Image 1 (cartoon, protein in one colour):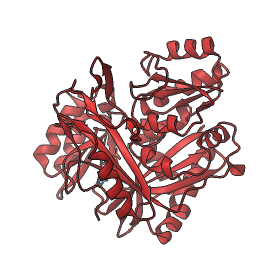
Image 2: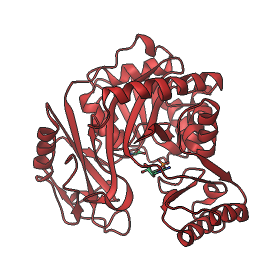
Image 3: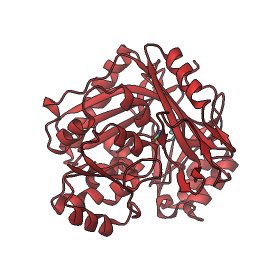
Length: 409
Ligand code: AMP
Ligand code: GLY
């Protein structure tokens, strides 16, 4: 089969690694470490992607990142006759608009933090000014490169953030509406599920490390590492999620006639008052994908095709009973300023998911914040963690930085 993967990060490389080399793969735009032909087409250039699909007569297209899913790339490709993995625009709204997601959860009685939505700056300011307790959470309604959420510890900080979102529009139209919601306390867990609109099959639970620095300090990033299964996601919590979150979400998707054939990502907070949904994503997480796929024993491509054809009920989704630990190598300074263009050196046999890399005369160089990731699996988390760090130590990058405490409980 001829298959295109839309996206360019470690997640997309992890997808490519799980697809048998007997297939002809393309990445759009991909990265230089993926080892497949990369097309220099931005993910938001729907027309050029469609033209490429027609020219190559693609058999299957996997749309991995949030932006093209929310913009409706799958709608355009499917309407032109191409089979795709990824929700159509109607389903992708669960990630594309946080207010849409909150209204969906209210309508279908799915536990989440209480919130208020605002499209008028003055009303948001008045509401925030009347708050007596902090922290409180302010979120841009739309996509904001994963940076639209801020936990606010005082009124002044909150007013400045509302101004940045709604007046200065630092995230453009994504800040035209905002949410102000209750701060939830607890441990976070991610559960990604395959969904074809009729059936939902959760994968293993995962725990990602969002903060830049050890001890979960520093700024939020796109992800510094991840482990699976999540040690706090007990069978009892899984049961609670199935009854109160996963099943009602699937029923809600059906009742609201959302077209969701792809990966539905549940961002969860395990609170003293039960599990609550922090967010939905309409795609595989990064680095959750790099962490989970090495444990997946069933055929990923078959599962994705089953989702597209609404045949997931008959499809096996089986994971090894092992543990995985993924460590991300970043450019020192990420998520703020960092240098690019330094050469990477690593043993050629090392199994790496590449992300922000470019090829130059010196070989592969770092080209953005998250450079690559290493995942190891083993019967225990401790062993998986030790293996990942031993393998990471074999890589050298002048301004490379990675957290030393991924998987340390
Ligand atoms: P989101 O993009 O909505 O997932 O938010 C990004 C991160 O912000 C989450 O993974 C949480 O760590 C944090 N967060 C979001 N909403 C809340 C909340 N209501 N209470 C506490 N932390 C939150
Ligand atoms: N790792 C979090 C995300 O992909 O959104």
